[in-house]
Length: 96
Image (cartoon, rainbow, N blue to C red; front, side, top):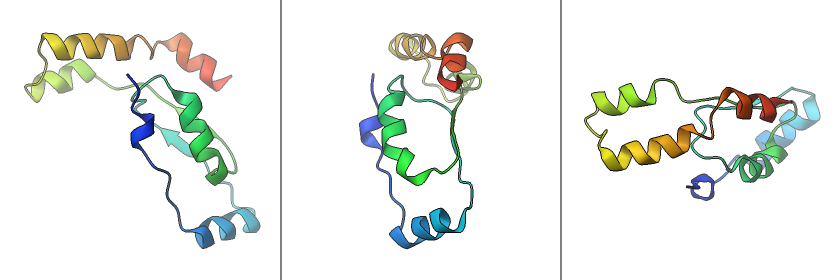
């Protein structure tokens, strides 16, 4: 499942230029990760980042889906596939 092509990077050109020219360090935190296509996301946001890009796992997704009444068999399959891309090892590999 890839959702990264649904997101567009938008930022006024002038704001980006001011930040890049002024030496301001600019980071991006991507949390929660919505798919495992981080390469595409990094390529899209890299021009707007002067420091680092961090990725993080979802917090309590099953509990949140259950509270919202949308945790059925189909959603469980989707969630299981998504969580398999968010193990401690895969996250640490991204940050190394």
